[in-house]
Amino acid sequence: MKKTYLANLIGSGTSEDPLCPDLGITEKVRYSMVDLKDGTCLVKVSANPGTIHGKIKAIMKTDDEALTILQQTYPNSDLSNMDVPDEEVDNKLVVLGYDAKNIRRNSGKTLMEQEWGAIKKLAEHLNKNIDDLETGVKQGRCDKHSVALSRLGV
Image (cartoon, rainbow, N blue to C red; front, side, top):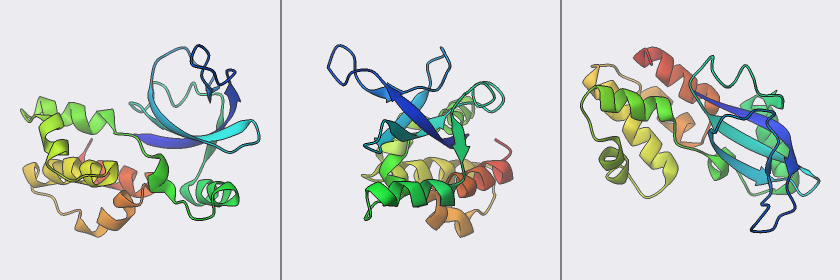
C-alpha cells in the first residue's frame, strides 16, 4: 500500500547526514521524496497496511492535495515524479511463484510502467480485469493503486 505524506525534512544535506523525511518512525520503509524547498517534503511511502502507516507522524495527503502542493514548487511535475515500488505487490508475486524483479525489468523503463506491469501480472494470474485503472496507476495516484490492489485481494 502506498500513501503520501507532507513531512518535515531532517538532516543537514551532506553525504554523512543526508536530508530525509521525518516520519516519526524507526522502522525502515521504502519511500520516495520531493524536497519542497521550505524545510518540508512530500514523501510517498510503501508499506504493508496496518504496520507502518498507522505509526507515521507526518500529515497524510490525498493525491489531489499532494499534486497541488507539488505543483506549487514544481509546476510541471506530477505524482509519477515521486513514486516508489510497492513491496506488497512484489511479495504477492513471489508467493505466487513469479520473479518480481524480472517482471518489473521486462515491463518498461520507468518505475510507473514497471509498477503497472507487476500489478497487471497479478491481475492476469487471478483472471481479473483492472485495465480501467492503468492510467491512474501510471500517473502515480495512490487512490487508483489502492483500488487495483483491493480488486486483486492484495
